[in-house]
Length: 236
Image 1 (cartoon, rainbow, N blue to C red):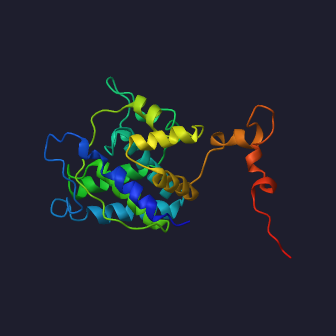
Image 2 (image 1 turned 45 degrees about the vertical axis):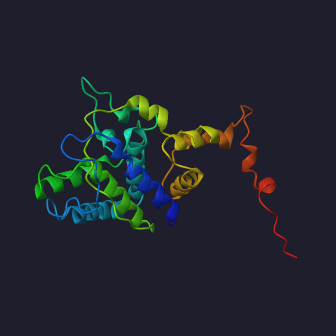
Image 3 (image 1 turned 180 degrees about the vertical axis):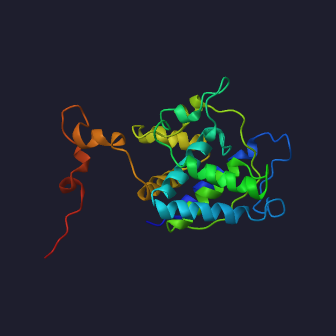
């Protein structure tokens, strides 16, 4: 299913979020032509590898899009989700929303490796994630948009932020609305994000209770009954 223009707006808002970060090696200005001189084939390399990955596994488009979203919703689009645990860092990969769930890291690694060969120490992982999300969106029938570039990669991670800020499947509607509002996003953005899930694959654990034991009585969620909730069609 093609993604809506509203989802384009959501991704753009998320992609611009690093503007509030501190940049020790330059100003906080992002623009699409950032790598035109330093790595002119950057866009082509990212697009080619993403296309290959999605052709091999269609689900990968949604995985890369989700990886970008889970990165941006914590501390901005800074690639902190890619960091492994160390003596000073607890990886965001270990958070409840991400553990054994987020995927596509191997595609990002392949892109980074190719870019390092073409133009060493130039293209940030944060920009790679953002470009990969855009290219994935286009490959599944969504809109194309110019990606502002020039992000710097984070040196730290926030597992607490990942556990706190990323919307969960069992969150109430009001909780999710609040989480979006804290990021400067509105109901239109929320609907767009929800709609984007139509291109992916969900784990049974995220909705099993609605099918088999919604209220503890062993019965499915009554709101799933089409006879009660779908408008009857008059065939007369």
